[in-house]
Image (cartoon, rainbow, N blue to C red; front, side, top):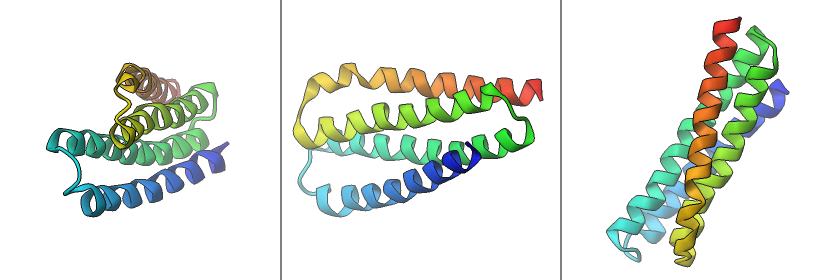
Length: 122
């Protein structure tokens, strides 16, 4: 699982950089400032949690257990749901996706709590 979380972190970071560049260069003049800020929020949270996945991989080696694994899967789910819903919301103007975004935020909170528990227990 350690390798899965490290790989997911690297791929999420790669995609985050690509999406950040896309947002800055391709969307900058085409979106309303509010929508561009929403897209950038998705990129920021994706990058934070890509790095968080590396912390999870490290913690899973240092303090093996279910808590670190839960943290990793929660971060992956959060990236897909939180950041993904913001990207789709902005690019397709599908505003109802804003109702889904908080589920990804909750997953991020669960992930950080589980990572904290893994460290505390270890």
